[in-house]
Image (cartoon, rainbow, N blue to C red):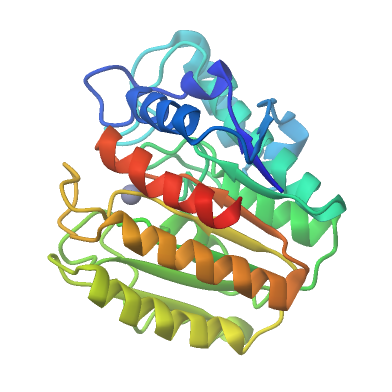
Length: 307
Ligand SMILES: [Zn+2]
């Protein structure tokens, strides 16, 4: 069974019609979902508590977001991520929803998808790249600290490197990390190189695969197969899958040229891997994607693979 998070609370995570991260993306996906019909259940979004957000984020940063949310103007970072009235609540809904899906997947045989989740650029103490709170990282901390899982796999196919997850867990061997993205020399955040393989005890438990601008489905598949071989070597109790759609050809912010077939390929393979490794426990998170049409197509492939 697949639970898909749906509700106007998730549409609130929108920086306005002129910003690439706006509610048209989710609206396009939900329209496509209506055509898909049944075969999934709706998961109503809910808000994370401050205590839950604190599993990953620093107290001072949470307070900073609360204040910025009350003021409702200015930026949360150097200029990519604006504050707006209610941004704290909107970001808390994204975290709570991902966490809720993770809890369901742990206790019952449900897979989950939070299309607004996967805000992978937020660090413990700062916003970045349209990301206020890092729901994926909060979920990782929850699984490790509260549920006491020995290891978790995080897989990220967004066009941008998942720096907020990579750097904050770079030396943590319990986080098995795989990230395919457009080469950091050509795209924000400018990181995620081959030699970034984790540090200390975690060395070798992280794999970053940068792909050059113009990389297509064939390139994606070869890189993803390498990634699957890497994941096969480890044991973990859960898969978190950031399925950003901004690598699909025609995205206004990136230069990769995948089709939605890459999303089908990755989601199908990860579902199978979750069944082999961790009792089928997998939660997908939407991530980036700034062409609403591409977002709808790519995420529907994820839905079909997980439903
Ligand atoms: Zn992205």
